Length: 67
Image (cartoon, rainbow, N blue to C red; front, side):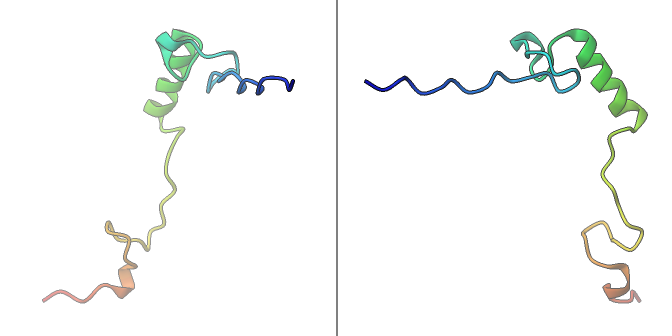
């Protein structure tokens, strides 16, 4: 008989790597959740943007000239 399929690896905390706790979703504790929130509020996590991109993603120089 073959061995049962291996269980998937346990999900780990997005901050410290410890096993996640369902109460804190992607984190192991309130502390790690607060660390992540602080990083968002301070702007550590940011989407890079180039100055040439318009809000809809068109290049500024490709946009038609207004009246």
